[in-house]
Image (cartoon, rainbow, N blue to C red; front, side, top):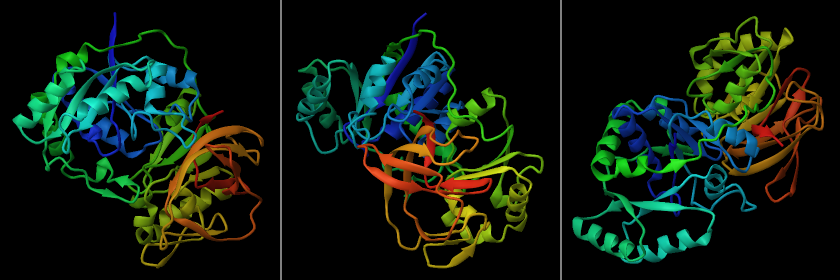
Length: 431
């Protein structure tokens, strides 16, 4: 039996593909369908919105940082309907040009549905869509969804232009300023921070149901081949205490699921609720997030900070990524320049007072033996932060050495001190 699947892409960021994807997911769920979703690339925020819209965990499928077998394995676990949201423009990937949403569509043999922001064009849309359709013959553009259309007359001109090049119009969504996402320095506000989330998702679904050909989308087919199960990175321990709240929300589901598949037990705790890691854990994972927005509160969470130290003293492997790395240090300086004491497990201070963007894919080599692998193990990851390391003293040594997507050596990253380690890098897979 054939399964439904398609990838929603756009010519560029800001076209509205996330809102339309969320509306589709909620509309399909309301219609009684079991629908899985995925987000292309290294994104922590959009997947949480997907999960809220569909009721099912959303995975990241990253054609730059993940091995093809891992992507195929993850996609093979999807329900009968798989909706994948692309990132940036259809052909945009890493700095080396690899790992685009188009590459993902080609690997998974998914038809592409283009969301086109038509607000400031009419017949020129034909040239735009024609260029995308013809740029790579190995990608099938199955149709377009017109977004931000101004009026029925505007719609008629757009349809006329696309009819001339035989590209199906699968939907026409009129401009609606009510369906906007508030954002901050790392992107949209998190799903769990929106008190109006359900109303927003229902509103998006209402608009999509009246504007998009859902039956036409359900006729788009994907490969239903059987794929072998593939795991990602080794677990940090057998019982892993995982920090999870609005300050530590940036985790990749495929990693957590892979750790469980390899026999690890995951026990969540909330630092912002002043919860300590499980006392019998043999590993603690502090993922990234927004600790810089909650530094004053975290500094007052004595149970959390003392519990973190106790875990380290008892021999548990304590690992922090990006925001988690910042909290493992001695202090965090917030946007106003105020200094807040952190866990003090690594000899470093980080600052959010003077923002500088650090962004890009990374090829990573472990520089020390850890549960993640022996020294010399090759990994992939991504870096995206505005804070900077402002002070550091001697530790046992750097945790990683990294190169960017073009192969330029970026030098040492992070640090390790005994059984405590961390860096600004978000790990994704092994090479």
